[in-house]
Amino acid sequence: MKLQEKYQQASKEARWALGLTILYVIGWCLCAYLPSGTTGPIGFPLWFELACIYLPVLFIVVAYWVLRIVYQDFDLDNHSDSEQETKP
Image (cartoon, rainbow, N blue to C red; front, side, top):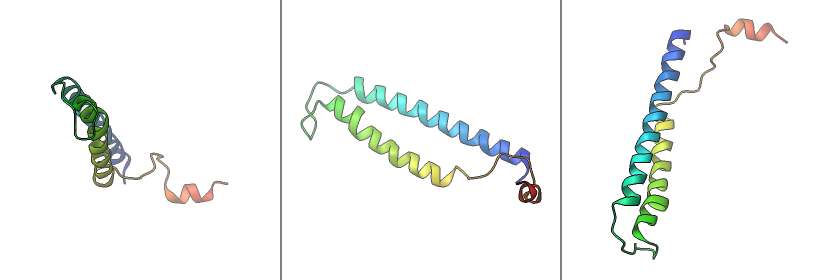
């Protein structure tokens, strides 16, 4: 992978991380402030269940799939493989 491609991939990963963070904050605000004062299925207030239980579990699954699909494991060093082997 060329250095420019590495930086493009790192930039793509940063955009995905920022986008997911913004989406999570918006989702949390909607879940915390829009539901009425009713009780949720497990006995807590509905806003608490949505914002603090269901949304985090959903985003753990989303983050897992984004890591599997978007993110790549690569070294940001600009050294070739032969140079790395010769260094102690």
